[in-house]
Image (cartoon, rainbow, N blue to C red):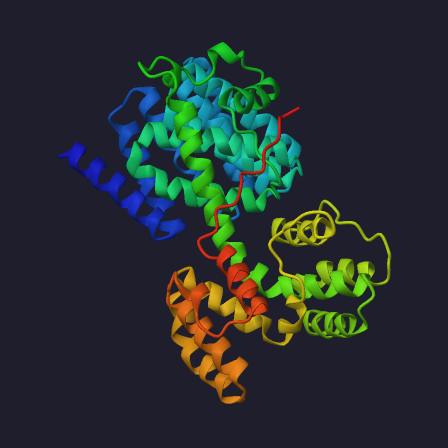
Length: 419
């Protein structure tokens, strides 16, 4: 009967955690701990149950109590020579330090936690540890270290969880790439490992034992080759509507720099509009600098999307980035072009709004606008043959080809060697 009560308390604890009922979770775990002590359970069992209380304590803001508990459990794990528990405890200590803004301490503790998790050989703990360390490196503004740890965590999670885990892992990897301001990726598994483990302090041959005792030693590289393009495609899909809105502005800025006063006027009109949105203000500053022939180069604090947009402008004089000459004349409808791209890429809510907007465009009058509205309607609905619409002049054909570059975009993986 006592065992049934213990099981019920443990189940209730996890349910309360899932419901974010922190105080109830803490109370249930304390009840369970009392029962274990009453029946004089082995110390290792009670220590692990006590460890679980750190999460609700941290969620309740009781950081001092959480720190004291984790130190107590850590001493017990060290005495019991339990590397798995040590890895878990020190990882939780790292999370606590990160919550309180002690980033360097969080990185140090998480690296030590990974050394213990490696000794224990638990792939699940290793995956979580690397993902957390990547997050701490983002906070420490160390993008390459963040990237390599996120890649190792993602690959390990896929290998541990099987193919069924890879979609969610690719989604999370895309988010981590974005948060880490990643502009280029190492593509070779040994490079990723080497860059991460030389800082963690684990000899490469001793890292991730579960991956390298497998009968398929190439599995990590194949998993990385599968994950990175899928994560990068998710980022491209996320960027595509924004690029479709910004490309006419970039075209106007580029033409203005070349001396076109009408394009300059359109560029300023667009930037005046964008200035109202705080998330675009860094880009507006850089674009105005370009118009005034100032060297306002992008800084490291720009978001990844901002970097992509700036580099498109910088590459335009020497590289074909897919923006047709004269695209700036469509600057007044750049938001519509963005919606068309979003709808073509599967945004159902935007697709539902488009017919009315396109009808309004066609109603402005003029054969060209009516033809343009019809083409955009076909593109938004996924018509792959829109490029061969009769009546399109050469400029409009180039516009359709440009829009197509933003639909289901893949783009090359930006590569770098980790140094």
